Amino acid sequence: MAAKISAHDEVESNRRAPTATVDWHMAVRTSHKLIRPEPLMSSYTRDQVRRELVELSAFAEGPVREVTGLADGLPVPQASILDRAGWAAAAAESLADLTGGSFHKRPKGLIAGRVSGAQAGAVLGFLSNAILGQYDPFAEGGGSLLLVAPNIVATERAMKVSPRDFRTWVCLHEVTHRVQFSATPWMADYMRELVDVMGTETKQQWTKVAPRLAAAVQKNRRNEQENDDLFDRGIIALALAAQPPEQRDAMMKLIILGTVLEGHAEHVMDAAGPTVVPTVDHIRRVFDQRRQRQQSPLQWIVRTLLGIDAKMAQYVQGKKFVDAVVSAVGMDKFNAIWTSPETLPTPAEIREPMAWVARVHG
Image 1 (cartoon, rainbow, N blue to C red):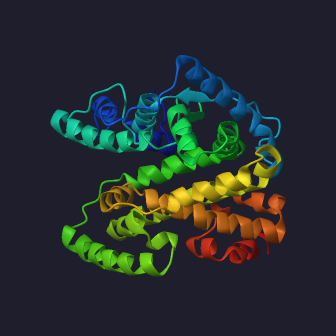
Image 2 (cartoon, one colour):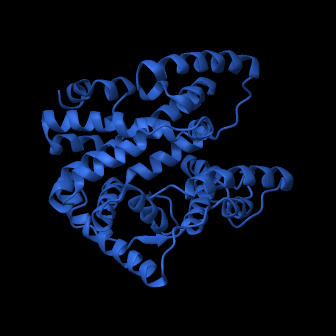
């Protein structure tokens, strides 16, 4: 007698089917060709940086848990300290799993797979030169905290700040993401579901997409000069305009979740920072200046296409939301946000935090 297959099992099976057309090995090879030379360090200094980042990422768990009230009693996994090439490879493997493909299997469409692999690799290569750290909730064997040592060293040197203070400050942000996911088991699956919806093929006609894109470009040019609203910025405005309703809704929910996660991490950095990072005010001021500095036209194009400027807007708008809610009702009541997808804010509530408070707390 054949075993009965549940609807959930069928959906999960379809999600896991390696239907993606990305050659992830090609992506990794391409990314490695685009990685810039790392900052000069002796082998002793390189090892010292790695040891200190492992130490500080464990240390940061204490103040983060104290500020957030989350993850009390849960174990503290050791962070992975990577170079740029290591981060690109780890990110490729995680993305392969997240998008329903396989890092270890070649896609059926060999040529298409290599083209898309090269495109993905170009993005990973660009990001690997800048990303300081990342919590990967989809890493094999469970979530993993990744810290990119050469980028942290390059940034602290460029900013001329205390290395230990800056490393602690970075760890506060990234460890907050680890705490968020550790304390909220539903969140990784929720993200997977939204990514699955966004990856669904549609037969939308270009004649319907093009007018929306054109309108979004015009609106975006005006709004980036007039305000910093998250949903009117660069790649987000364009991507939302191009999506059919179901995918647009999923993308909006992902943006909201990312905004809450980044804003919460920024809030925790500022709340915990003064007690554990003596020069936190100086680091925050210099770091924010780096975020806002002038860019060349080429830099602006690349950052816009990759959504980096939109991510900066997530930091700003998310922090405003979290700061306002915590100031009004305290961290304990803010933590109701982690209850379920239904307690996450709506786009309107991200702009009006007290509307979220009224809906969730009455």
